[in-house]
Image (cartoon, rainbow, N blue to C red; front, side, top):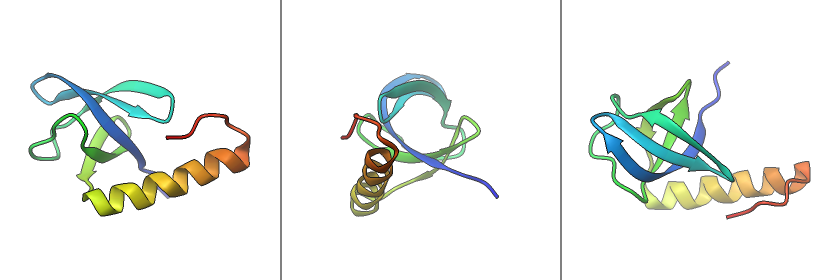
Length: 79
């Protein structure tokens, strides 16, 4: 089973590299597998690679579900 976590692109760092945030965690990811990512886009990340760019509607729904999971886990951070 694989898990892909939604991240929001914060900064484009260079060719096929970006700084992205998942909750309070920021990390450098690779963007080789998706086209035309820009700051503000939400992507699914698996093993450090963005594997899919989400539509705004899907992004909001998925972020809401992750916020719910964080709240249930007792994590204070939410979007």
